[in-house]
Length: 170
Image (cartoon, rainbow, N blue to C red; front, side):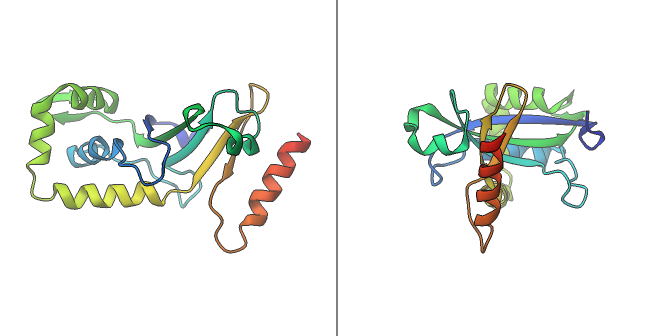
């Protein structure tokens, strides 16, 4: 295991495939951060704490995604948090427990939604998640996964071309 990932926990949300869709994960992530959970450090950019990936059932090569129907594609947003216990409404819980509690308890949701800074924090988290580089994740041989960036900024298109070509030579 990579030592940079120790002491962290991932939480993953499945979202609508279109880029302009409302992100369902934003309220629970915002509430978790306001409750005291913290995103894991990036160690100067060595390890990300947000992964925005598109995957498909049976997707073996990143180029296959353009030929798939929307119903075959999944959009997953994963966030890497520090693995800590936080006391929320008098109960000490892990992040995974908080997410389950958030999904089941309307009173907890209402408590956070009444905060004066709620809307501002929602907008900040939404912007940060949307700014993360989306990738296509494709399985190679069951042991390897290749992630190829979707967006092209400047001359980074060459990076994407290099990754896809290297993947094809496998």
